[in-house]
Amino acid sequence: MRKNLLREKLKAGKPTIGTHIQSTDPGMLELMALTGVVDYIEFVGPYAPYDLYWLDTVARITELHNISSTLKVDQSIQEFQAQRAISSGIQGILFTDIRSVEDAKACVRAVRPDTPLAGGRMGARMYRDTRYYLDCASAASVQGYNDVLVELMIEKRGAVDQLEEILAVEGIDMIQFGPADYSISTGVPGQRGSAPIKEVERKVIRTALERGVAVRVDLLGTETLEECQEYVDMGVRHFCTGFEFVVVHRWLNENAPKLRALVE
Image (tube, rainbow, N blue to C red; front, top):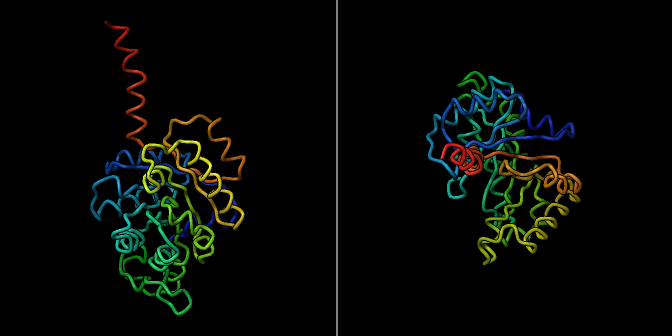
């Protein structure tokens, strides 16, 4: 089993910087890895069509460049997607749409080994993570499943209401507040950046850090350092930035009109 690079950084108390990928272009994925500036690349599964071979590609390319990888999963098939991603060699799972303590416990069970101590649902696997069969059902494979990073989206009213109970669930490594989904679940769609929702986000972050659970903040990739400073001042040390679709779209919107003005 490959050493879980994200787990090692968390154990050492080091910050992490990731980036997102939505497309299933191996070249785009490799280009991101070639920057040498990120600790991991997260494929945002709910936002793109993909097949199971793509998960292998994500793991192989990130391993080649000695960085880690994570997958954001859909709640409706989260256990299948999470386990298949882990078998491919992906080292962290971001679970979405958490609404209750039971949802949080189910996420942890999905990725932990099926041992009496861990009580998870990962059994013997004959795929990439266990070198197909060479490490199947080995002590190393069990440790690998224990090391998978479990991240939860706190983005529904129920999750915010039960936040302290969710944070107490053993095995949760990191949480992230989702203002867009929270705005929908509280009946105010489109107000993700409003003052009331920002205050809920601050409360979620403060509570998690007080309970010893790491917090990650998602950035679209166009924020200024000054906008990020508030999170750093609160104690956040984990960020995932840059959706390539957003970056390209905003770059064109900002620069193409300037070019048109030069030539017309």
